[in-house]
Length: 372
Image 1 (cartoon, rainbow, N blue to C red):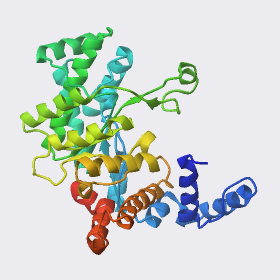
Image 2 (cartoon, rainbow, N blue to C red; image 1 turned 30 degrees about the vertical axis):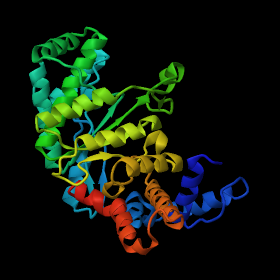
Image 3 (cartoon, one colour; image 1 turned 180 degrees about the vertical axis):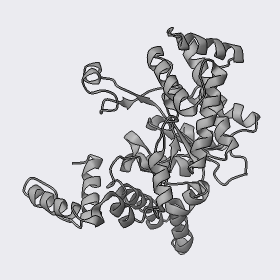
């Protein structure tokens, strides 16, 4: 109790299965049998659940080397719900382990048809895949980074660093930062060229437990919130793109709540009037996608920016029952506004206007922002 799983589980049981009983040891077997019976019906297939929750568009997360064969098959089939890829090039930046990086480059070379022997080849191969993703309907990129990278570098330095890691040599910390800075910038330019939206979620320390990492592998539940000083690097990164007039629409998700006010003020530095809310402070995410985290994010955005332009909630859960997470968000949003109205902080006479704002944050803003 008091863990968000308690809320999520009961909301999933209610909205998907119509189960309104409290889940506990005495009811568990009955609820399990009820849900199992329904899961055997077409209505509760993956597609059935997407239709049940009125899903219009899903964006998956895909590596540049992915074939996207299933996206193409769905598109050719004419499935009524759009299922679009999202460009996630994290492995193209992961130069910390030269042997694994070389193996990834060989895979990327195979799918792109471009022999990757130097840095310019790598960029050509990535651009080839970027074009392919666009042809399948991609409109977004997503970057899972520890911090923002904005170290000064020269082209010759990056070429030499690539040669070194390609040859199997370990890089210094400074070389890694320069290479990641170059890759993050070049990827951002590609996104700008295609009018994509770039997303950055930063601030996790991954695979903290070495023993269990060796036993179970990555992404098995041993990540935590990191404590990094990122403001200056974040500012330099966006400022360079802005100076070059190549700053795409952007969403920033922080994983440490101490960064809420910093991010809420940072996005204001780079709005340019071309798109409403061009630079977005993303919803409370990962460790923060629960009531307290969502409220804190929306309070910071309200105090230091414009809540009305917010593109709202997301979920990257692997579960087809994760869609109630959006309802969870809408309830929290409405509670925030409702409490303000009750306390006289917002005018009760403007219910129509406030209702339209909720509709926009819950649906219209995202649909328009992403050009869906």
